[in-house]
Image 1 (cartoon, protein in one colour):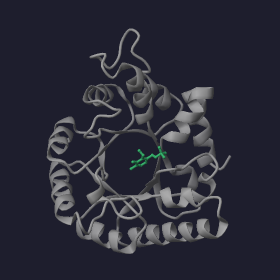
Image 2 (tube, rainbow, N blue to C red):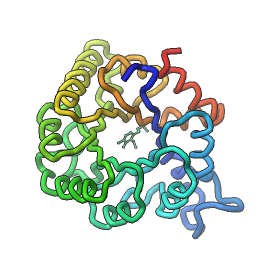
Image 3 (cartoon, helix red, strand yellow):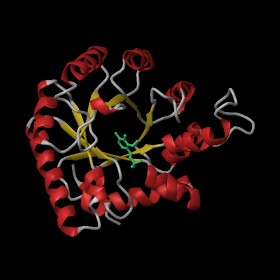
Image 4 (cartoon, rainbow, N blue to C red):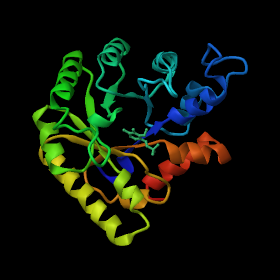
Amino acid sequence: MTRSTILLGVNIDHTATLRQARFRDAGRTCGAFVEPDPVLVALLAEQAGADGITVHLREDRRHIQERDVLRLRENIQTRLNLEMACNEAIVDFAIKLRPDCVCLVPENRSEVTTEGGLDLIAGRENVARVVARMNDAGIPASLFIAPDPTQIAVAAELHAPWIELHTGAFANAYYDPALREKELLRLRRAAEQASLLDIAVNAGHGINYTNIREVLTLPHLHELNIGHSILSRAVLYGIGEAVRTMKARIRGE
Ligand code: PXP
């Protein structure tokens, strides 16, 4: 991937966080005064150049609701990436929904590695079952994991077509130059390893308009999934400007 062809997935969960802060008990997810509407935000993000829309249907439904996901599936023109836990009910929902891809993420402590990604060692059996169900359904599954060689080796054994490298430790270390370089090196080695194993590489968590410069030096990146920084900028300048500026950063402008 050359830098200019790296795709931007916009995670719009926090538009639903904002809506739920006021309308959790409204009994509806959109219409009239129930705002903001995540679907409208998604359409505006697409218009501004987003290459895909990501939402996380959490088991506790703290932001995105099932109805949001169904409306997104019907309305967006790019690709729908559904983030989800390895939970039977959500797996059934995803197979019916047929998103363009899913990203398996941890939701409870026992599924999480020290760096916050899926623990493919402790959770191997469960993740393997979900990846196999998704492969059978023709829905590519990505595994959200720390840039850890053991995790990546297991992702290959599970025949995951994609991984999403967790960039949170790098983002947290950003203002400590030595630690930042160390985290960047771990991400670089992880991307190299995954590519050698024929696994496509996405990255996400904590990426913003500043630290993206270093993230873009990583090899083999297919897509970046970015939520919080884009939506924060959107609060001030609108979602269109926020997405266009991030796309320009990806192009190196
Ligand atoms: N990728 C995954 C798998 C995530 O869980 C999240 C956070 O919801 C993101 C990317 C986006 O992270 P951020 O909101 O920090 O950009």
